[in-house]
Image (cartoon, rainbow, N blue to C red; front, side, top):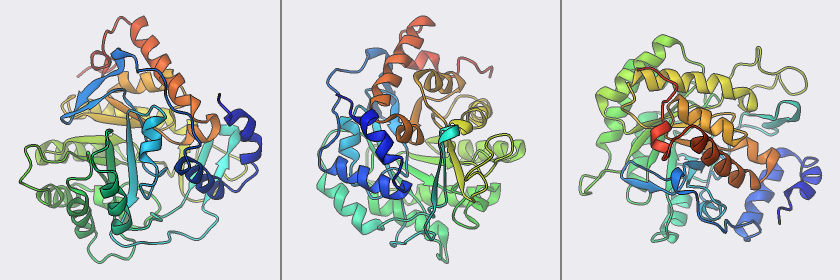
Length: 352
């Protein structure tokens, strides 16, 4: 039984960050539904040397400290991404720093990489070692770090062997100067050092993905594609939250600083996704994230070039039952278009 519709009127009255902490606590206590039926076979896909039973994952930011990845997998997610985690614990920006925009089914946050640091997350991942399920680690840099690239190298070394894959997050708008690492020269240096930090005693190095912003020019996107291909990145995540507001949201809370996520981000993030798939000539797997609220949205990301998708904000409005609905409707979209497998639909709308 899905109790979220009954609880939603009450949780909407609670300050967003407090409501989120209560959600994490409930998940830790096992107070969440579990998927009972197997995923449609058409949704399975192999990427990065990993087998995904379905392409729907929980995006970074939901479980910053790796407290509930197994609960999210049990809910029916095909994979879970924890973090963003920084080498040292940091409190993030002053509260309030999360704002709901229910009229738009959106959220604005300026959290600022609040997390418990590498050691706390490492202990949790060590404790779950040997359990099934794909768990990626999203790594970041401390706000006051003198060498931010060194922080990313430290993240690779801390979790190599524990993470199913890494996401290098240089696209959060809430750490001053972080997005400057998306520039071509800076990015090439970052990627080179991060990839070199991986262990060399593994049959297959842990995959490294780069998460980019949606607020980039055509030239900047082309530069990122060039670096990603030249340096040997394993994939991209498109995209993070946007600092744009014009034409997206107005009214209550719309003028709060921070990154906008949720439904208004869908068109912008999907457009950037389509551009990156074209620029990389379909050679790099892409995880599509931003504004997914339905199976049709998720399927549109697939046709725009994504091989996997991630959710977050929509869960705050629709609850955990959304995961099952999205997978069911994605499978129906595939069948309606005559695709037997998810991989056959990837990039169907993009001419290379």
